[in-house]
Length: 371
Image (tube, rainbow, N blue to C red; front, side):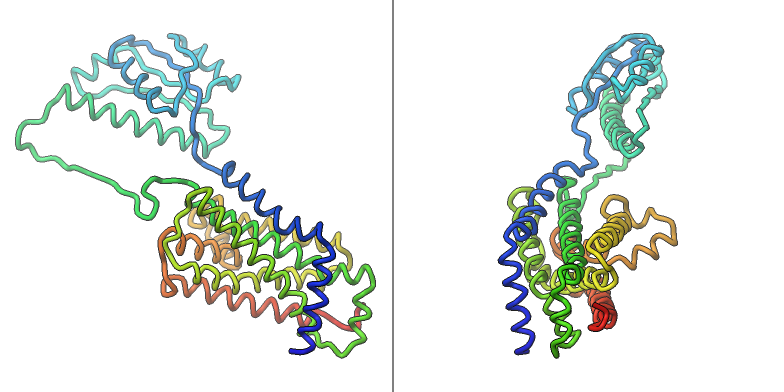
């Protein structure tokens, strides 16, 4: 322990002297969290809509009014020409076409059914799906309103009254889902990047040779490289959680101590991966590219932007090897759902095993005679 304390003192002195790097480590994830949490959203606040109304009836106008009144759709033009609407869609001037055919009101009154065509710009399939869901809910509500007016139910007639409610995120606020995941990814990127640069930087400047001739063991050296940045990334996480709570309104329904306990275990794994990269790379450039490649895989396989359940079977198995995925599960479960230790012990155990393995690999890979 005495040797380790001296090594830690040396590492903290180096960090304190490099004020620019320390500022980047603290400020960069804060700025990125503020920007990405506002930009990384599947919500579409407003889209331009073109209407082709061939019916020109009160019901067709009511349909358009409901879409506009929702605030999701902005009326960018209207005519009876489908060709003109297609041209506007091709020019990306509008994203949605609502085509009301002739006889819309007549069919509704006589049969209770009438078709309406919705055309979306599906270059971005996810956005088109969101717009389709918005329009579908609005039109379903309008259809129910018309059905109540045109075909009032007889007294005592049985009917099913379906009411839905979303638990844990009743307002369906995307920030409650995205911000914890983005925070995990940002902390991971910082931990992996600084861990991967740590040993290799000393290789390049020549100070590692001086350490190698001392009786310091490999485990002591790796521990001294890990602990200072483990503390710094915990500070980053603390700032990020404060921003998530007070800026983006993310609820904290579970134990904050459990969040930090899981983070302490997870950061050993994240920094251990970085240190393992640092023992493999010969230059900082190599370490940077290896770290970038691993972080890209982490993000794509973490379930942050695409649900793991929607991936192919082999990809779902591969995602289980990503520690980011398991920590995102813990963060969302504890913060949003109020989960306890008994609910998240499985991903927590996976992270503990992951950290033990990569840290052991980093210690075994480091050679005091390789410098």
